[in-house]
Structure formats: structure tokens, C-alpha cells
Length: 408
Image 1 (tube, rainbow, N blue to C red):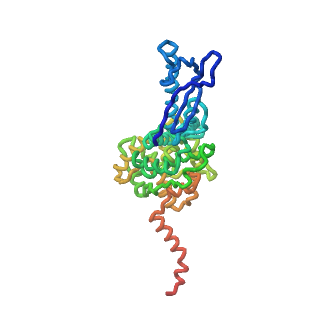
Image 2: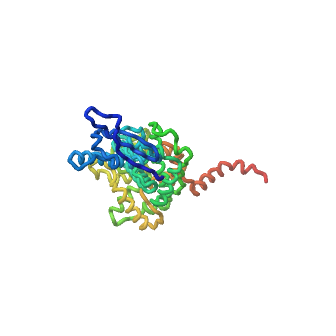
Image 3: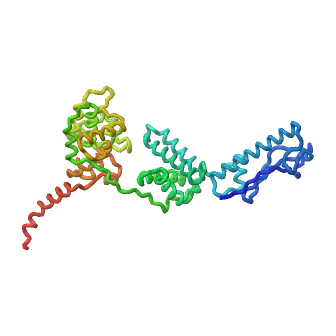
């Protein structure tokens, strides 16, 4: 939007002082709107050039006066550009107030986002994780780049965020940043949490997300079948590091623990339960939800294998997530498994192959996975052909009496 802007100086002739000087005033004009303010400077009328709006002469006094006026003009111009970067419609009064440091009671989206991220950062290790801060930080950087790309601004008044802004941000993430549909939706979802904060604090009245639906595309997250699990379990590895990675991965396949929870697993998390069996009793790092998991034979053997090998209380040799995933791809190649195996696949395998396919209720699986909402568990849950066959065979047996009674 094209705007007109100008600043000039003039004498306030009605303000003649006792020493014969007159105050120098400034006039800001923006798109036909006008605002005045005092420069706090004064001059003898005969030393003022109304044509150039500056002091006459080349003596030291005139030069100092004109330098001060130029600095004021430069600062007003900077204030104009600052307001323009945040507001759609600009007035001279807004520029004047910005120059004078008078609060306009507006909030910019990136400023609010930065404050939020700083709060998250200060809570790392208390109630927030480093990963959570990183997600919000990436979202902030994408939003900052989008505002620059779309509007050529360094920030925006939060009141300017509307439905169109959100749609364009989502398009930008997928087209310019090459994000997948679900990754873009996740960034928009994180951005929405900042808008909620803005509404709760009264910075905006209307909700720009009111008619916007964040859509996540259903994705088959993958899992290992029982046969594939056996391939990995039975494989002999000449490399000790591959063997260790296999053991930790299999442990997760039979416990459902996420990478960070396996990494943080300590001796004190292994406890004897009410049934005299050994259980993993821990809280999920991500959600802080209690998770109690019975240790089956396979994970028990793995724990026994590494018992007493670590002095810091750890129970398993867990590498960095990046290295674990790299080695797992190598393990998949060696075992002839044509799947993109990552450590998180173990969690899906636990939910699908190890528990649900064997008749464990989804409620029990949800508890063991440490989910706060069973809907999250349903994302992992799959009904396999083997499970359908097993269930229908059991049903067939229960309907035998009715079947025999049929007279066709």
C-alpha cells in the first residue's frame, strides 16, 4: 500500500518567550493526517529560514541547531518505517507517538512469540523439554521468514493476523520450505498456540483460526511383523556396536518405550510389582504421564545381558538418536528387511505386533505407552489380517451351537 510521508519544522509564533525566541515545532504528515510536537528547541525569529525550515547562517550556533533538527527528522523517519512494518494503516499520530515513546498498546506477533519461547527455554528441565523449545524456535524462524517473504516486514501487529495470513503461511511452508503436509500442519498448530496466548491476554478479540481447520493427513507409520522381529532377534552380528543397537531396539519393541525414555531408564525404574514380577515404572519424558510396563522374557534377557556394565545407573548402551537410526538402517539391510526402520518404529511395533495383535486391549496398551489420551494410541493401533483371522476363528468356535442348529 502506497503511503505519503513528510516531516517539516516551523515556528510557533503564538508562543513568543520573554527572551524574544519562539519554539520550533515539528509537523508530521502521513496520508493526509497531521500531527504536531515540540522539538524543545527555540530560536530568534529573524534567525529562522521559513523556506528551508532551518536556522539561517553558518555560524556555530546555526550549525548546531540545524544538526539537532536533522537528527530529529532522521529519528521521525525511522519511527515511520517502524510503524509501517507493523501496521497496515498508518497515521501521523502513530508515528509521533512512536517517536515520543508513547505506548500504542499494540503487540507484534514475533515479539509475543519471542517472549513465549524465552519462557519455554527457562522451563527446560522443569516442566518443558529441550525438544519442545526447539519445535517452537523452528516455528518462530519459519514465521519470521514468511513475514519477510510475503509482506517485506520485520514484524507485524498481531491484530493483522487473519484467516488469509494463516492460509498463506501454510502454503509458504509447503511450497517455499518444502515441508510435508503434516509437518506444515504441525508448524501451524504451534503458531496457533501463540494466537491463543494473544487472545487470552486481550491483544486480539477475534480468533483468526475460527474458520480454519488444521488438517493432518493419515499416514501409515509402519511397524515390524512378527517374522521381521524374529529375523532381527536371531541375526548374529560380527560388529558389537550393531549388536548393542539391535538389543536396545528390540528392548523398545517389547516395552514400547520411546528413545528418550530408554536412554533415561535407570536401575531404580525396574521394580517388583504387586504380582511379584519385574516391571518398568517410569514417567514419560514427553508427557510426564506414568507408564508401568511388565517386563516380558525378551527385555528381561536383554537387561540381564548388560547388568552391572554401567556405573551411572543406566541399564542399556544407548547411543545418540541419530547414530541409533543410522545403525538400524544398516541392520535392516543385513536382515533383508525392506522397510525404513527408525528407533520410533519400535514403539509402533510394540503397539501393533507385540500387544494389540495378541489380544491386549487398547486401554491397557494406552496405559503402557504412557498416553494421556486414548486417541493418541489409536494412531499407533492397526488391525492386522492375522488379528482379524484370529478373532473370527474364536467367534466361529463360539457360534458352533448356533451353526449346528441351522436346518438348511
